[in-house]
Image (tube, rainbow, N blue to C red):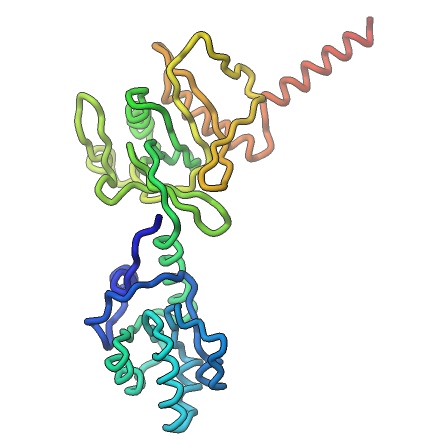
Length: 313
């Protein structure tokens, strides 16, 4: 599940200025959507006031507030703060923050913040940040790489060769996202993204070598923080009693959350170049996404040959 997100986390992530209520930054944020209370300020209409969201005060809300007389200002402020939102954020074009907000901040123990970004930009960045950190998360024992733009999750039992395969791929110029543990979350649109736990960012554990830092060894381009998972490559030890797909017509899927992710199973045995096989699997997935399927085309050609032969007979 997602970790607790505090107003302080938003302040640190977006470099917000704390105007008032610095001692109240430990308030919890539970919603990724934000609110602009212009209707509440203008019409004194609080029936549908989304008070569990961070409240954004842009130039429009500020201008409306400025038009009110002192008595109405006081009433609106009381209702805004009495709803107990996590925080109020004033945007770039609000030069002077009304004293009424600062006074209410101390009375209701709700922080008032300021950003140097425009209202549209601030809403986008803050909403994106909250959507990310509040998303449900699971931890998978796997390796995640960016191979020519394709997010490939390599799975398999311990000692099957996941990290060694990933190291060879990074050596070839591909990009590591996470080794051993992958923190996976589902974002808007249903897409599934993976990233490394903070403790293991940039790091790989290679038996016989120990812990290595891919950025120190291969440069900054060898690591990226997050990647959408598009393909799962499952490495399994070769078993002659098992049946493996030799043509590629069988569609496999791995369900992560409720999203089906294309999957291929690669048997491991001495002499097989796993890095090349994973690399080709990613390239083949890309071709399929463009509508090219070599296996289907081969079967179609074979069927035509068989059919034409039967007609001649």
